[in-house]
Amino acid sequence: MVSMDDNTSRHFPNIPIAFALIDVDTTKQDKHTYAFVFMNNLFKDIFSSSVHTLSDTQELEPYFNDHIKSYPKITALLDDVYTTANTRDYYHFFQDLELYIHFKLSKYNDKQMMLIALDKSESIENQLLDHRLNNQLILLRTALDAVPEMIAIKDLNGKYLMVNKAVDNYYSKEFDSIEGKTIEDIYPKKEVKRVKQLDNLAIERQHSIRKKVRVYTDNDYVVTDLTRAPIYNNSNELVGVISVGKDITKQEKSRKELLKTKKDLNLFAMKYEELAYTDDLTQVYNRRKFYKHLDALDVSKTHVLILTDLNNFKDVNDSKGHAYGDLTLAKFAKYLQKLFSPFEGLIFRLGGDEFGILYSDENTEYFKDNIEAVNAFLKEYHQKLSIAYGQIVIDNSTIKEKINRDLAIKRADKLLYDYKRQAKD
Image 1 (cartoon, rainbow, N blue to C red):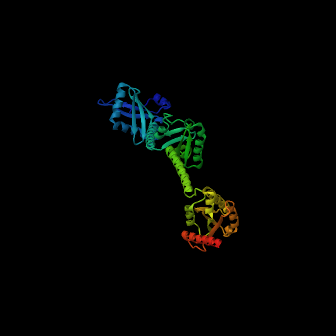
Image 2 (image 1 turned 90 degrees about the horizontal axis):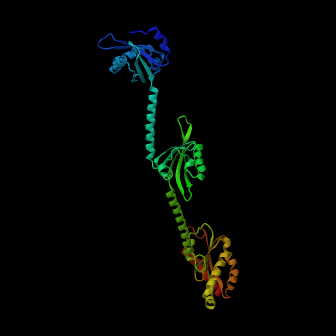
Image 3 (image 1 turned 90 degrees about the vertical axis):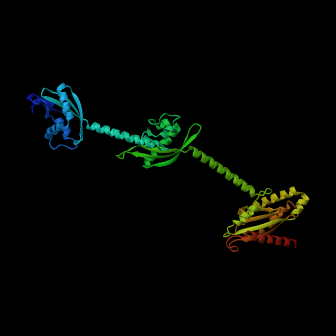
């Protein structure tokens, strides 16, 4: 082995690069042999700091000598550099040491070659990491683009870092791409504050929130079903907000139209019911409504049912005409409504000059107490007019469960005609 001269040994340790010297044995005619004779500390540090550290840096020389013997390609490279005196680059991965080294090999003198080592392991690791991250990013973007809902990721300043195709398609008429834009760029000025408030609400609550967001434009509006959630990194630091949304404008407008149609139908039904249950002449309830109320009575309460008709009403029509008779009936209906208004009593025209009255109160003698006033009112329209009535009380003392409508009417009707007969007598 050729040893280093004193001058070389004195100056080499001060060179701030990792290098080694290789002795060249040219005594054999058939081939040259090579052996490491010197490694500076920087060179040793590269390999001693590896994952699988050699127990003694002195072992590096035999370690590299074994590598030269094991790899004919390395021997051929050494031969080429020694013969041509050209500097050659060589990259080698030491699998057992998990190191990736960039070597520069050059001829130092007739007996030695210099090997400079550059540790590229970290850069390779970074490249591999970048490659993995890039692949993950591609997978993430592919996955997001496959989702029909709109997905956007924003930083804490409201800048869109990543959006899927659904978002870009949604805004395609206004923007080529949303990424890199801000909330101020995307939303109408009057909506920016509200959008930021919703982002901040998700951040404050530290979990996802879901809201329907209506954004008004100049002449229209759009509705989005949006779920927002804060994003945290591995250190649990808040870094942004993710939002997942679906354009539900068509559904909301259809729902609004449906609600309007339903409201209109309800109003129409109410109007139809009002017409169906109202007497045209007197504008009080008719016989159909009378039956419906009787069937629905709550017998746990006290109700008073009164059936009436007008004595001598035919004389009104005969002497003053049917128009006057109709007017008299209409006025009488209004009078009854006012008379029973303290009890929220219901007035029904059952046909001709017959009326039904239904009210709920313990004062069952109310109508009897007002008979004179009723007759006085009628005589204002015709001197022969008077009232006849039959009254029954409906409660749980007389009816245990459900009222028998026909029987109740029959009882009141009998009392009505008893009253008329007694009046004639």
